[in-house]
Amino acid sequence: MLEEINVNSSKETTVLMFGGHIPKEYSHYEKVKQGRGCLTVNGYEDGGDPTSLFVEYKSSGGVWLISSLRLYFQDKAEFSRFFDKALCPQEAQEEITAEFERKSQTHD
Image 1 (cartoon, rainbow, N blue to C red):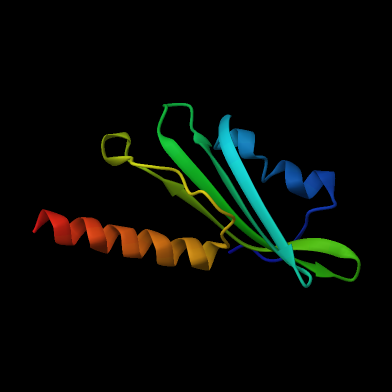
Image 2 (cartoon, rainbow, N blue to C red):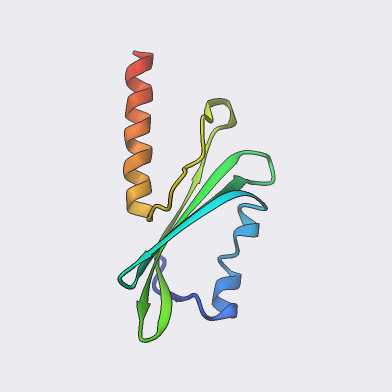
């Protein structure tokens, strides 16, 4: 499980480089408010599948620490759009679930 990671440390962030999962970035969105930030990175993985990364981070003791992240791999055949705003992982999960439920209802 991911514990707090210091995003100011180049050694620690090397592990989280987007290029390993999203070598072709399409877009990104970030919001920061009251010592908490959310980042969404959209792009394509090596096989061409659309992928989104959601990161939540917080300020603690003068450094920014990642508190959670989520990678979302989308099926090319069912891909309709990338996320167009900054979302923390929990917010992204809620939107993904809601979209999946909407699609399921239209196929019934």
